[in-house]
Image (cartoon, rainbow, N blue to C red; front, side, top):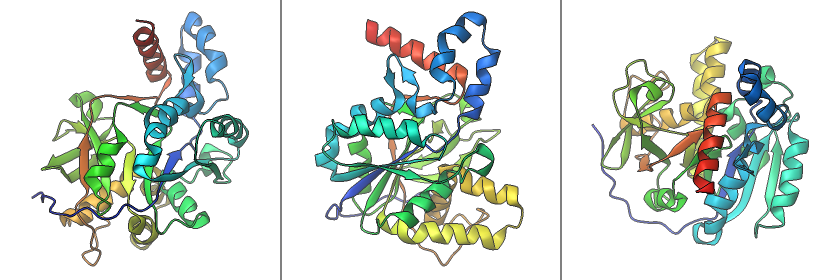
Length: 308
C-alpha cells in the first residue's frame, strides 16, 4: 500500500543540475538511412555525428530548450549553484563548444564531466555515469536534479523541488496511452507518492509514464547509490544483467521506490536499507528524442507551434 507524506520542509541545501548526455545516439543515427529521400536530405546534416542533446528542434537545440527554458529562469529560486553535464570522449568537443557559448548567458558555472568512454559498447550507462560524477565531484551536501539530455517537457521543476521538501527523492510522471507505456517506465502513484515502477511492462497496470527527470537527495547520491551498486555486484554474475541495472537511471529510481515501499519482490531489495517515501510530481507533456521518427515528429510539432 502507498504511504502519504507527513514531512516538514527542511532548509534547502545548494542544488546542482546534472544533464545526462553521455549516450551515443546510435539508434537515432541508424534510422537516417530508413528515411524517404526528401526527409533524409532535410535532416541528414543536422543528425549525422551529433549527440541527441544538440539536435535542433525548430532552430534551438534540445539542450538550449532544457537549460534556458526550464532551468535558467529558476536558478536563484531553487538554489542551483552549478550545472553539470556528463558526456563522453567522442562528443566532448561539441559539448565544450556548447558550454563555452552557454556560459556567457548563465550566472552559474557549467562543468563538463567526461566519462572517458569512446563507444556505445564501452558506455558506463546512466547509473554508471551517476556513480562517475559522484566519485569525481564532491557533492555530499548537494541535492541533485537529474535530467536526461534527450527529452523535452512541460514540467515546472520548482514543483518537484517543493514536493521533495529537501527530505525526499522525487520522480515525475505524465499520463499516456498503453502502447507508449509498453516502451516506457510505468509508475504507480498514490497520494503524491510513487508506490511502484516497472520498466517497459508488457501489460501496463497504470496510465502513468515516468521519464528521466529525478531529484536525488545528497544522502541518496553519497550513500544509497553505492548501496545499490554493491547489491548489483553481490546478487548478479551475468554481465548483461549487471549492465541492464547500471544502464537506465530509472532502474535506480525503481530500487529507491521498492525500498521505500517495502517491495520484497524487487531483486535488489534489502530490508536493512531505509529509504523515505519517493514523491511523484505530475506534468502534462513530454517529447522523447528516442529515434529518428520521434525527432522529426517533435521538430515538426515545435515548428508548427512556434510559427503560429
